[in-house]
Length: 117
Image (cartoon, rainbow, N blue to C red; front, side, top):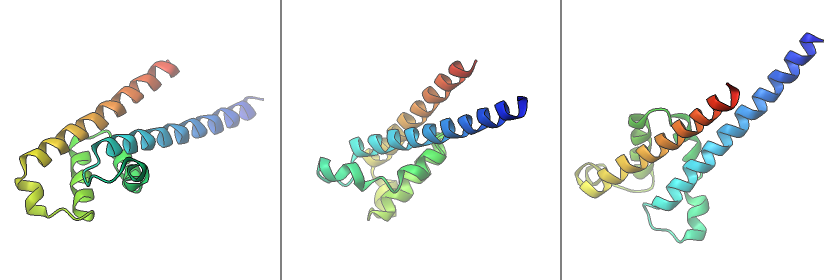
């Protein structure tokens, strides 16, 4: 009986973790869509950045790592490295977006800790 309960509990926890990860990916995608650094129409922005969201969600615990991912994303979509480094507005956007993602991550994590306490 105890083993069955443990297996069922473990399976439920895995499902919940998977749902949390998908939720975080959705949150990251929404933030990227709002930022929309290449200025695509809103209908396109829904899917334009979705490929980057899982990678950013994986490092959401670290603002510095998020910033690195955002810089890599900008380079992949055509921004010049020098332009990124020298443009104060882009630099501030990167910091603001990274901070917003990190705060959402922390908020979600705190919510989870309260739920399981």
